[in-house]
Amino acid sequence: SAVISQKPSRDICQRGTSLTIQCQVDSQVTMMFWYRQQPGQSLTLIATANQGSEATYESGFVIDKFPISRPNLTFSTLTVSNMSPEDSSIYLCSVEFTRETGELFFGEGSRLTVL
Amino acid sequence: GQNIDQPTEMTATEGAIVQINCTYQTSGFNGLFWYQQHAGEAPTFLSYNVLDGLEEKGRFSSFLSRSKGYSYLLLKELQMKDSASYLCAVRVPSGYSTLTFGKGTMLLVSP
Image (cartoon, rainbow over all chains, first blue to last red; front, side):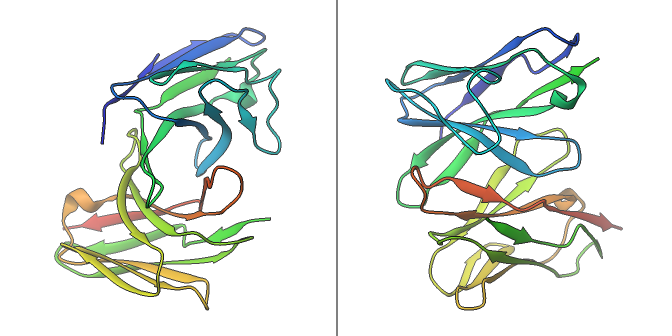
């Protein structure tokens, strides 16, 4: 396993603004994943970020709303753009270390509240 | 589409045994995972099944039947610290073999 750090851990944002969440891993990983966990719900995959290529977005999520950067093998950012109260959620960064099992390790999450 | 079902809530007593069921209908299957998530914390990995049968790891065991699209997580000798949400997730072979999660089962362990 490894240490996965996310910043900010929580924030309160105004409608219409954008916020960038950072994810730092203490070892190199090929794939990083961004999940969303809305209140009382389970985890929903937003996109997969592979270093050196464009992120792959899941159905219902678009790059204009959730731009992602992956500049190197230990770091990624997710931006939540033009936020509305519906974007209030926990955003989790995760990585896959064990290719045989595909087990995911998660960061602590970033809890965003949009007013 | 993908569908993963698990009970919303369960309650049990300290020292008891509890079984949390999960059924799935997915477009492909490449492994089933159980995660534990305490309130306000990140999910942590508990178990992984890719073949039919029982995997035991200490107080936790997980069972899989691929033909039935069914799994369960068995927790023995329950402790208060086991109060948490338990997430069932299926790895679907689509592109990057990502995980699809169920909504989770909130387990409350009482004295």
